[in-house]
Image (cartoon, rainbow, N blue to C red; front, side, top):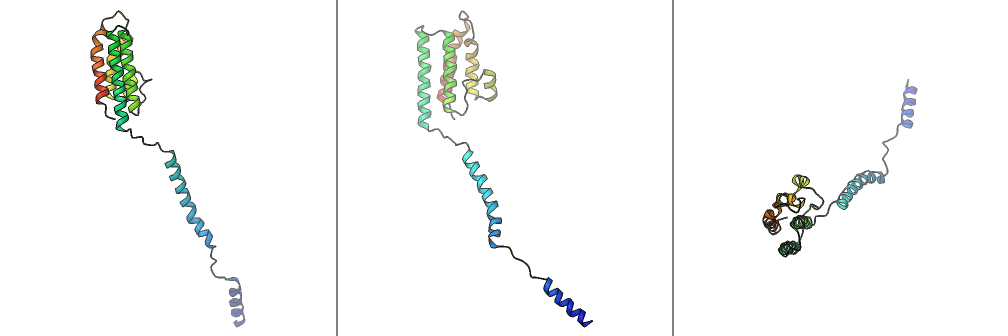
Length: 164
């Protein structure tokens, strides 16, 4: 029996080996790959983000002055009979839409009144709702004359009091 035990010990000594270690670069690779994936997603997210464009106060003041001057021109053109009432209402609508587009995040120029009521600022919606019927009214109708002064006043109030 002693011979069998000696043979078993010799057999066990030749078959059993100590634990095998991995190469050190594999450990670093296992750490580096998740870090690279996180950095990739962070870089893509940062690169593809929408840049915040704070509008300087001076450009807001310049836009405000320019659009108020255009409203004054419309009023003067109507007074000189160079512009029809319908044309004046169309011009007012275009001016306030252009102003909101210039100073705000919304492109209001192509939107209908119904679309503006959903996504537009309330002041713009009020002005456009006031000028909308006269924009499409027949020239002989008296209502556009009654709405011109309030439309100009509301348009000036919108442009003067706008806060982005």
